[in-house]
Image (cartoon, rainbow, N blue to C red):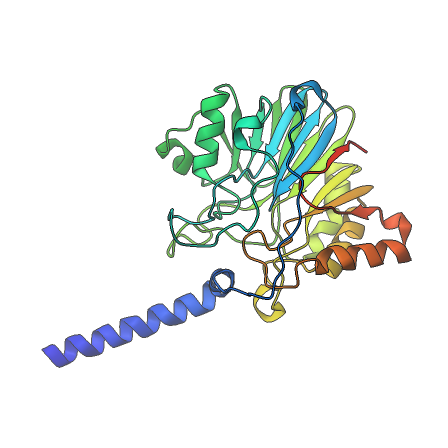
Length: 310
């Protein structure tokens, strides 16, 4: 009996190990540390953003603050010290957010690309909704229950290509090539994607995470002319692990051309949580590409720089 139990445990452990190594290689990659990576520089935003309009700023990772005619939008807000279900262990940010969460201007809408911990941070969402109770949170299909169980309200859940009218714009949830999971056994039980925000003045696309996929070539036809794209360009090394989940900068450039984006800004790079590639390599590749083809109009900076809308 004891022998059979031991054999069963060994078999189950082997199956579990194979499962983790097959489906969670990228997650394991984020736990590696690279002492040779330098820390990205940043600027701390201290000016009063309540008096500013028609701007965007990259706060860190995929967190972007966007104002369109006094409608203030926040993408993938994470202000916690770690991207982890635990307070004291798990991937830790190397620089603080470019703005203190308590210094955020009134937020009207929040958009979440997917439920990975570096994109969906429940503590940050609860703090922001505590500050601004009228904020509306928009999440992929499958994540509504997660937010409701955390006590969050005013939550919309959208399927791929579903549209919703919010205030003075239309938001569309679009698919990307990525995945979702909050734990070990909920892989792909909720959706993942990007958000297209279309107003009378501008058409904006935010992509939280994606690998390259040819279906992006049809997006300009489905969404209309894209004026501004927030494009992930980091967390891509080593390629044998990350190529199915994250574009590298060269693929991001190809994706920008597929989207026919008029202006693109690179996010999700710099080793804030997970990157294994050299810290400034994504920025350097983008800059070299711009030197060869200025019409590419692809830019990136350190977090905390405030830009007027293009």
